[in-house]
Length: 224
Image (cartoon, rainbow, N blue to C red):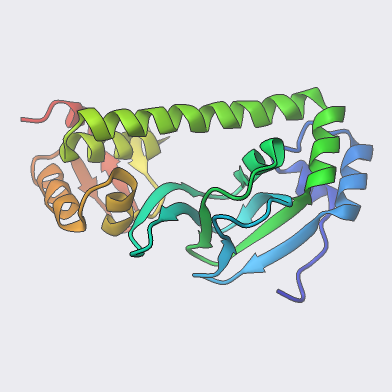
């Protein structure tokens, strides 16, 4: 992780979480934060690790997951540029609750616990942004629990695709790279079942799989 360029105020200003800080606050933060790079497959955090920093993703993608003693994984989320993680332990002083691994080469900004807490104390808008992030993740966890209890695999796959889709050129498009194994681990199903559901969705015209994306048709919520 050597040879990583220093953190500039311009880089920090482009991060939504930090964009409302004043120029003097950004300048102070730029002097104390660190910038790290990770190769694909690198471990960034492990469940049970001490909590010492907030992480902001500058480029690449990471997965947040939990695993049992047999190595079975449940993916909690896949995060991309400008998203942050590691804030919960900084707030309640608990150890890390999940594992974080780079699923493609990525760069991160690390903000230490004292600097993070100082920023929250001095900037109401940043504190509200962190709170909104926590609420969003709580709502997502509630939805995941509900879908596991109430939906079949078809419904879980459809919901995941709809929730990860963005509007591109008037179409609902999943631009994040999600393998069938990723989807299976995110919805609590087998890869084989996910493959069958995806094949049915495609053959029935609910989705169109392209080289680098998945287009979702409006009738996906009206399966036969």
